[in-house]
Image (tube, rainbow, N blue to C red; front, side, top):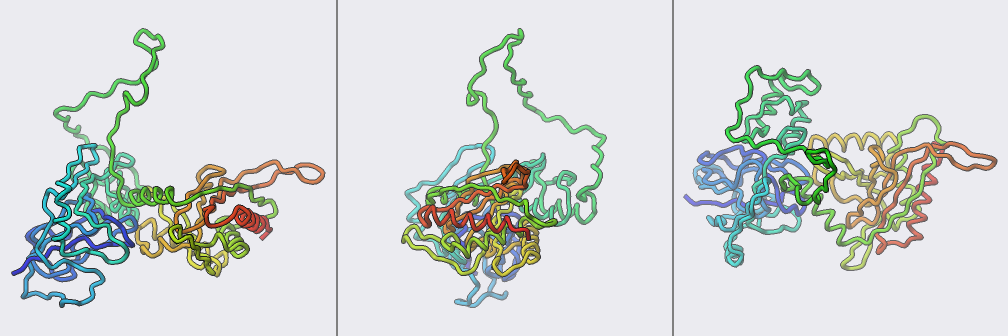
Length: 461
């Protein structure tokens, strides 16, 4: 029997890594071709990865919570020739290595959430290891090849430790994580815990809190003493000089993962590549008749402005100094979640009426919340909208993410005193911020775009 090493394929569009959520097998198990091997969380979705062969599982790359770099060994199998196998050359959508090579332990990098040290293998051995690799493991897009593994832990939010994928499953099943009995290491809530709670109905969202157990929790053998309360007064009650914050700062660093990890990369890339400029003004909504869908009106106004000034509904290639003007308007709608920022694409916004816009946005938000949105719907938009005013804030400098040229920021509605002929009136107004890449369009184009948007927003209906 021969062995096969399976390297993590690109599960998105050039995504550099993915986090192990749950293994469906353990070492020593036998698995059949195309049966689910593991579920992995990427920056965009939770993906179930099938087995590339039939045979015995010899080795698995890590535990739930570990981050595996694209192209790194995910599993090793002992192929069973008596079971179904995929024919050589058959298209599977991705490629798997056929050799028995697996990266040595020295190639690993371990970075812990608790701020521990980072250890790495000899960098000089990298070219040799690269030459041995049998499989690049790509599905689509460019792959960043590496043998690094970063071991991460679930992050506590609201006092509950759980992976982002577990939180997404809990939202989907209507489970309140604060009422789930955690069985994972270090009191981490696992996938099985959520599924069990959903099945027995013991942690329904909105249910009355579960009574605390009568028996007191056992004391820890070496519980650290509580830190002394900070004060600007001495024990005698006199003012004292406080130390700089850095001297007594506490807390442990934690590795970013999933959506937040990808967001950090995207923001850094945008900061390095874009020359941003922002124009601000207010949309006067005083003439609006009846109750109207504000987001639908914003989308319509953006479409109108894109038709009036196509230069901002475009992509810009900074390397070749070229731009692409788009005939359709696909708007990236920023959606804030506990796991990080998603930007799904509202396709063909120029073809939708108000009801169509609302239906499409509700569908996108629902798919984002339960992490079922396809990766293809999180890219390819031609211009962006950030409706941050639904939380707070009037004006902003939203980040333009290449290759897009512009993003519109909608601030918090307010009632302002406005001068009119013969006196003053109180009008409802919406602050609008337009950030654009000044390499791709002029200030005059941006100003005309903003005026067309404001004019459409001011219409009665």
